[in-house]
Structures are given as C-alpha cells and as structure tokens.
Image (cartoon, rainbow, N blue to C red):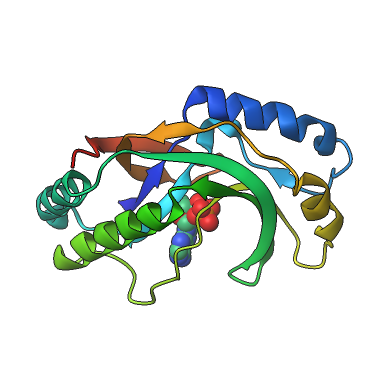
Length: 183
Ligand code: 2AM
C-alpha cells in the first residue's frame, strides 16, 4: 500500500484557511484546488510499503512519536514549488515550533528507514500544506504574493498519522493508525 506519515490540520485551523482562500478561488480558475477534507502536512512520504513491513514500521513510528512532545504550530504565508516537473504546487507554510517539527520529521524518517521503508532519495523537509496544483507554465507568483500576509491562529499538534493514499479518479486518504506525541 502507498503510505505516508502526515498531520491532518484540526478543523478550526482548516476552516479558517478555507475562509481565507475563498476570495482567491474565482480569480484562479486554472488551479486544481485540493479538497480541504484531504489536506495534510506531509511529515514523511514512504511510498509503496509491503504488508510484511507494517508491524515493524508501526513499532518504529510509535517509538518516534513517543520521543517528542506536543508542539504549537500555525499556518502562515504562501509559497510554490514544482512537483515532479509536471505541475506546480501552491502551499501555505507553518510557523511556530518549526525546529521541533523538523526533528519530528527526521525521527519519523529514521524510524521508517530502520523498518526498511521509505524513499531512497530523501527530499529536504519543507513544512507546508499543499493547497492547489497547476500546470508548470502557470505563473502563480501573484497568488503567492496575495496570500503571503495570511497568518492563521495557533493550534496544538498532538498526534502523527500513518496515512494510506488510495489513488484513483478521486484520491482518498485513510488513517491506518495514529500516535500521540508523548514525551
Ligand atoms: P505534499 O502534497 O505535502 O507535498 C501524499 O501522497 C503526500 O506525499 C503528497 O501530498 C505529497 O506531499 C507527498 N508525496 C507524494 N509523492 C511524493 C514523492 N515522490 N516524494 C516525496 N513526497 C511525495
């Protein structure tokens, strides 16, 4: 199954973002806006994971989560980056305990590697929440600039989710297991 470790935003933070994005939707019809129900901050993308690796992966992820304390985050700002050269991604960033979030992402990736899982090519962790995709030739600079001043209210990150990504006509994400940050 195709798996990643991610952080679904709590509903109040998500709804606040939905409201903040509203004025921009009609102005950017060429963008494919991601469904707010599916929004997540990706901590570590694991890719295709064989069933036999799951028990060890679960043990390692539980251990990684137990080594970190809950943290305070908020969504803020905007950015864009290319995704696999085929599309551009429009995203909002994260403020607050970013250093600790980076350490959590490192622990999760290290735990997954010890379970024999994860990507050989390791992308540097850039905390973000993907909001829309578009063709690489679309200039979304003005959108990034317009949304840049966004600064959401703080929320507590208390759990990490192991999420299964079901690709298809409509992508569907399903939490396989979640662990509390418990240090
Ligand atoms: P992103 O949207 O947060 O950038 C689930 O598929 C998530 O994993 C995606 O939303 C994407 O995160 C990330 N992802 C997908 N394919 C990836 C890859 N090949 N390498 C790294 N991350 C990937």
